[in-house]
Length: 384
Figure 1: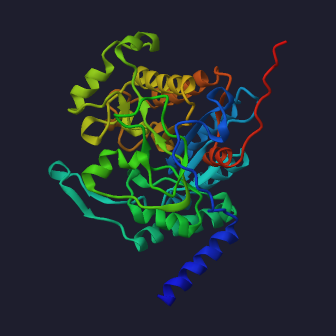
Figure 2 (figure 1 turned 90 degrees about the vertical axis):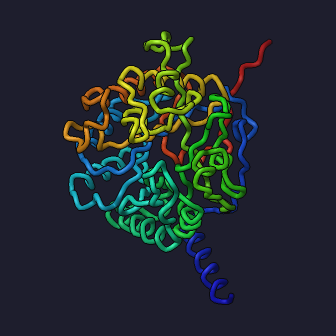
Figure 3 (figure 1 turned 30 degrees about the horizontal axis):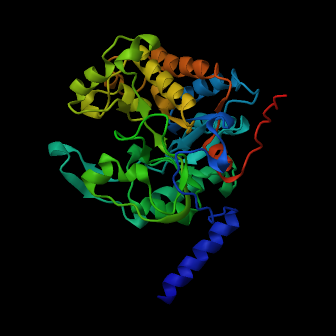
């Protein structure tokens, strides 16, 4: 017992030394923070790219966002949740340093890109093995150390984490706090019972996660999530597919939801996993096999519903590796095999979003900072 108390005390000292304040305790809420109305908060969009094993893919997205700016004149920024195993490539390291110079955030995505070893054979019969605390420590701490030492960052600058495959267990979040990370963006928010435009805002995991509790992942694999005081969750927000009466408005044929439901063999309720991979991959790989126009329609429709609703942030999970011609598995994307078309999905969506006055492309930490610190509310003219 004494040994455990000593270890806990040392961990807390380490966390405080990083400068993070884990005294935050923010409950899940469908209303914007600080008593603000939706009209008084920006529509944040967080582009978060995983992996980064290809310098060309990174260069493409950095070139593009550098050529644009937010409606308020601020630079467009994003997050790169990175596997440090890719740092053996000097060109990849160079693009990471360029990203930092542009104000982008570097996040932790583990060293070797492993997570829960789920058994997807025989209809997903169960879990082969859940990663232990030590497994997660080995993966997360080693990545953290490599990012800090290779890119010359301070520990508090590497604040965000996304788990590979969006697969996690309670040990994941315990280790995130031990390592001193500030937020996670692995838990999906916005399931079949929740309406687009009224999702939960980011919150701390003091009392678990409503998104996790409502997920198939929680129910099928029986993975409970306990209390992790002060650790922020920036939810990985589900996309929404345009219903039949909106398809034409977004430039696609009617019947998208019904055709997707038939293809995957279950009722999606018009929701889509918020990663580029899932939009494009084949049905046997957990995807929806969308083409370019359908993908753009889903992103635009999702943004519009959020913008007109309670303005929860929009998260768009990317993989810069997928936007180059020599991507290792082009057959995975049966209806969008051309890398130029995949790039166009992101580019056309960004340009569409920038037509909305209150949109801001920001980092994950920008969103967390907004949640923690009341912003200045824009002045409202007084009618006379």
